[in-house]
Image (tube, helix red, strand yellow):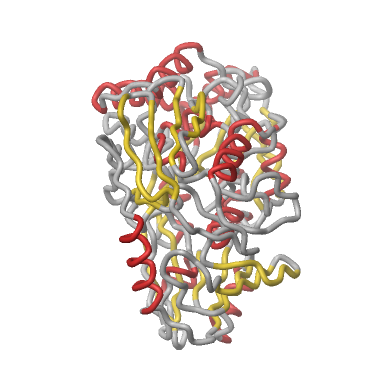
Length: 506
């Protein structure tokens, strides 16, 4: 959803703020030599890799930021910096960068980088892409670009980004702003990434290795990216071996994983799933929101994941910067919930609807049953990811399932996009109509606070307010991501959950 809806145990992952300063270094010959050596060691065998994803690709626009689209776009497009599998920031289209002061970052463009159509990457392409990220009304990364005040072109290779206020997460945010040709048409699928688009048929992408890629060439000549949304399709693909790597293996299949030629690999997700209330509709009353939170038996719901998830205490996972360990798990109190509902409904029953993505029928039934026992009748509405995302953006859902993955390793992206009141680049995914001047103030202050201890204090204060005081939703669980990996390939899961063909080895 991330951010579009992301529907998918945290070990401790801490993404430290990258504070880089000092002058830039300009070793052109070294860059060229390293690129040449890396390419010479690359495999050029004409082999095909088939990857199965759970989330569909919602858009081919490089400004898209939902999980399904982004994990595919990262094969074709690149940003100035990129995130390593363990969430470190490293140079990509920017060969080097530095920060002379709190408001200025200086970058040197990597020389001799080519787009897939053979045209050379220029600074004008970079500036145009960043401006589109910040200003295009359809940009999914608009909130991440909100602090960019000015982009200064110093010469043909060096440019500066000036921010409106100190932004301790600017480099992480830039990793989301993909670069594409200036004035590119909507149908232009040209990037600088390790793969170029060859076919797009029925939601299946066939990618071809880009022979003129500036970095190490991808090991596989062809990568086929498919969508396996249903449990049935995933099991069939594992059973007949028509896939090499598949994400989100069904938990009940993973419990006794016995598919010939495949190994099960798991990694804690950066995603937390929860239920959200709409403050302008059925759930205006804090007492009713409290009743739902008390009625739900989260541990029973977690059992539906076959042991591959842990109950969540808040809206980000342990290890995310901004996680508050003082917030304890909310134990169910069914009797209290029932009394609150009777008080609010004058001994009648309360009716509402719950919007969920298709595929969560068992989960929905469990929630419906638990709430019915305290006097809340729930009508379940199952929607496609696109339908659910649009309904939430329009703020028309009474009560909905939502997932958020803190890809930046920081609670700021969730708080900025989901919690802050809708205004400008804030509240892009605030489907709950939640508005709090105090929460807004703390979120805005945290966004420009460089000292990590002070930032942490503000982020935790907001987390306590929305989880304990205002109850904007009910945290459910953090789920492990389960992968089926062919024994013919070598691959380790990334902390952020993305599957990139260029990182898979033979």
